[in-house]
Image (tube, rainbow over all chains, first blue to last red; front, side, top):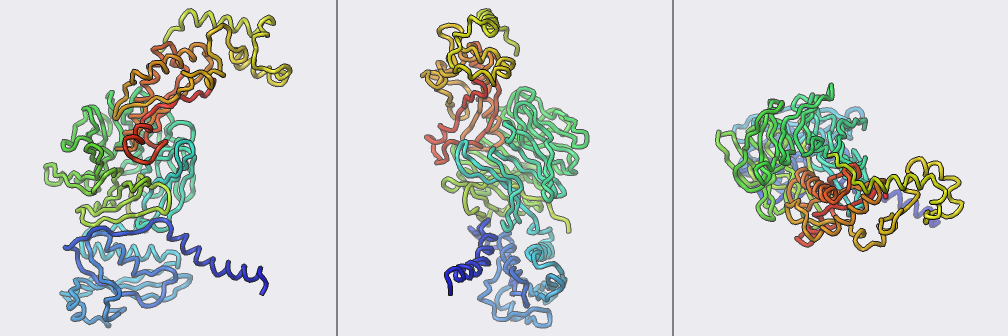
Length: 433
Length: 182
């Protein structure tokens, strides 16, 4: 065999391995801590092949990282039923499983038809039975949708597994830095670059339909706010005034964009009508007012201000008026993320050199605080659309990494980019089928 | 803010403009090699006659001084934690850069404000702007013109050190003086 031929064969053999590692090199997953009260569920390996994707693996990982479920190890399965007629309830009751998920796949067109059934072990009752057909490259989507259906059926709350995350990466220092705005599946798979730049990129914010991102780019020598369609890449610069153009946030109906502008001499909150591009000034104070986030009714904005000395949270009407302080615990509260029902606000809370993610729960009328992260330089919390988890950025040595923590703080998952610094995660809204 | 130009600066400006058109002044053009002006004289003369004539009196700064003058070579101002007040030790640096701006009205200076990595990124953008504004005010108080100055805040997005710890953070809490036109 000639040397060239051997090289060719070697590279052919390597090619698939390389493709596989490239696909998984985005974010690693790691579960820290656990929840004793989590519901035990057995996810039996699905019968039949779905190509590259192991559907039951993806479902198991989704359910486990939610903190609400404890999945049975695949090795500990005494039986592998793939449909209702094969389920022997006593087996699963003996294994102390509350729920059982089985399924099977068969080729269909250029993809697969995946059937699944969910059972309540104690009641010996089938809870769900559905079939999904999709192309091979959508099998992870299918898995996330099944996990969402299981989550909703058992907990009564929609799952947020079939969603995406946006985040910013950087590498290098000072003027040699490189920045990228990325979008990946909520479990960190399939990362892809939305924008690359040699100048800083910041503050991604999802449009409510999940199709666009608003973000800040310094590519023009100063900060500017851009809107970009994720699929087509088409983009529009909506704010590039003198001074700061920052912290964009879509209104719940997508028609307006709240942002921070310092064109008036210092940072204030403005609301832009995206149809007319007309600006309404919502705050007017000599302090730093920034990081506006909408209340779910679209009528108000929660924001960060140091008008009282140190950064704290305030709330103001979307068309202005007097602002009310809403955080009174901790000497530094910033970067608010408001839950879908407006009852919870996640923040970065600072105390000396320690910054942790804290959650303010206003659902009982009062203000109940809980800590979601251990610190010490945690920032940029972002609620999942069902508010069951919070994504945030922390530091590990010199690099930034992302974490997803359950809102009861019991399960924390680390999403590590292979290299460079990862920060400013933003959890997408629910996707539409 | 519209600061009236000091009388001496106006006088200098007039002198420089006169000089640019007068043959007798050509001997003061130090940095232009003979013959080099054939292709560039048009753009050079029309866009900014002052740039091409160089210093018009002893003691006035020229572009070369940015690299050689001990004071002008200082182009980073550092700040204390969460502070935007200019520390007294940087007063001399403010004085010489303000003088440079007075001596060279065509000079343009970008003041790039930065913060350390702790806390909220967008809040730190605000903090960086405050620091940039503090340097801008100090330069204007010493005779620089606001029209020569632009403040851009990078917050914590362009650190020069990412090791963590106060030594590192103190290097990142800074305003960089960047001449976009010398």
